[in-house]
Length: 77
Image 1 (cartoon, rainbow, N blue to C red):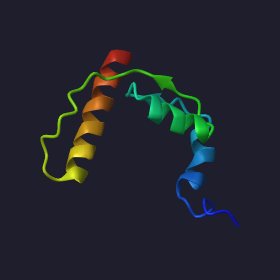
Image 2: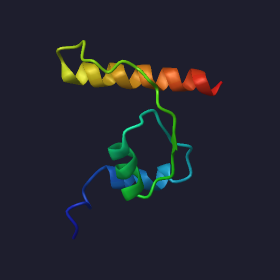
Image 3: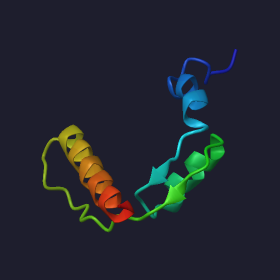
Image 4: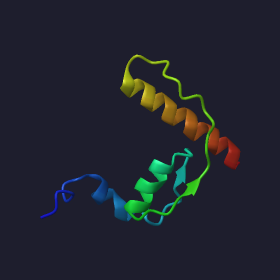
């Protein structure tokens, strides 16, 4: 049994294979990680300010993700 067999991402992968995935980041590391798990994706950097304005890291990450998604979605319309 692989150490990865209990990782939740592997239960999601089959659902993601046929979906349009947009990476709202120019990060080479994020691109590499998505390629390693076999996902096809498009890169649309969001150019959103990523300076930390939240003390709580969880709130910051959620807020940043939403801002990036909104920016890229507006660009795609």
